[in-house]
Length: 310
Image (cartoon, rainbow, N blue to C red; front, side, top):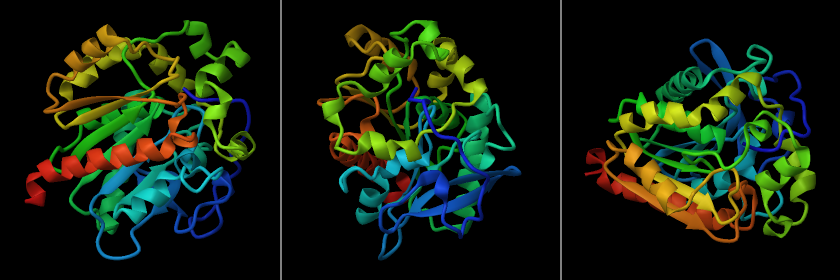
């Protein structure tokens, strides 16, 4: 769950034109569109400058954000898209259904399982036209993490190598009213944590990465404890879960994490990481580089265990 206090997406633009939905981009990052079962999804793409990619990383933003979350502009060290490409990965950050180019067609968004199907279709369409490398890793934040986990539960695991998610637990630590949009000041504290965790200009520049949260997402947030009990046992790839030091949306003490790990009963490996000096919006803070490097290290481990790599 992320801040929905500003921003309204303008009409979709062609993929070759500058995309004002995401503001400015890091060098080597460009806007794209991908067709997914008749739905046009916009997003941002970065690719290695030399050679074939090691793998494809599909990044899914949280509620009330857009794909620009993964290309933070407040400091050069913040962008996952830049770092991933420098280390040999293709990184595709999608605007989830109901955001960006699809907002006009899907003003209420999609329910969780429908979003998961749309994301899988988008990845299939993208990899049909681009060299994907050894396979795909999904990296997702907050509500995007729920979509990533639901997508992983129905994915062909010969192509999916792993799932790396942050800002998503098994049991909410807040009241349903906050999830439904009440309590603006409290929501800002939950979304960001201490403000010194973020580079200067983060909150001015963040106006280009926030977007209205589609109505159909709120129900899946409230019902995640029930939904996850059905989704998580069907994931058959390694999973990494990161919790920021100042994560306040989700309970993440030892008992909660043991329960969450137990639900991932079919995953061959589950990694739990706690990230110091970070708030809920990890990929926009000073800790972003540490988180992204750890995520890319996990991607390397998934590559190393893939039969297609041997």
